[in-house]
Image (cartoon, rainbow, N blue to C red; front, side):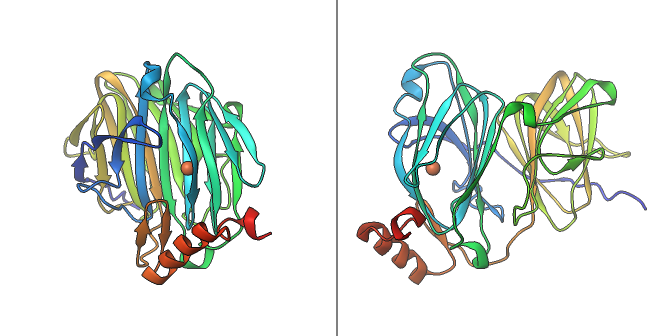
Length: 290
Ligand code: FE2
């Protein structure tokens, strides 16, 4: 079988914004240049050494109809929800939260100085699971396998399979791949991606040619840029002279209508009206109705 290499279909830089109570971040998916990459609704990159950029955190807010995925590179974030769940996410840890019918939670820095860096990804839920009971997969750093490949490539596997090893996140509708990939200068890393999945690469250190193959160079993607991948069953990444670090994320698209209002993402306007009604009337979250 010959490999059908994915090209770069589009590139976005994202835009600087702030969210929560005033956390500075860069929104890469979920902004006008790249509104939705089914099933991915949002990708935020946060990263600062200045406490004033993150200290206000994300005070209590609701979610319905989606999953929120947090991956911490540096710093510590405390999470608490209205069902009494709480925990601290530290460097190298991840949380895959399926909000389902609803949770109200806060995400606040567990530090007053130093570096805070990471990503939050929102994954849409299919119609049949939008009102499911909320659940979490909290992944400690030591539960994330690190695969070492030829040429000194290192891959942290949060979700999906690589070289016969599987990441710890399980049972997610989107059948996701989520990998943190470090490639030394000039090194190459090839990655299989299910042909029916949408996929992107976001570079957060160095630069790389993405979508190269045997015959041609790929598209140069720089630090802070996201490449949406075209059709195919694998992607080749070749790091530039200073190496590259990136996340590769893929998931099965839902192909369903999307109606969103802030942290509520449903299939119809009526369901959004219902979510707002439930939130205003204290019948929103799983904890409120149980
Ligand atoms: Fe949240």
